[in-house]
Amino acid sequence: MTPTAKLRFVERKVAMHPFYRDMSTGGRAYQTYQVLQQWWQHASTGQITTHGEWRDVPLEKEKA
Image (tube, rainbow, N blue to C red):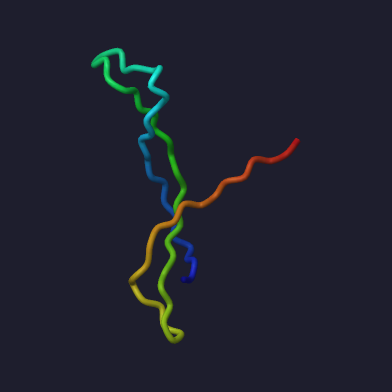
């Protein structure tokens, strides 16, 4: 797999702890996060193909 310069942000809904409830429906509450992803291409015998996958980019926090 070869990383490329293609990047995108996607929104991902994650269920919160069962203690938190949605006030309008009374059901489970969800929180939306933005995730940065990078396109990785399959490279076979030196040729770049259109097949690949989006992978999450790990983000690091600066240490003070």
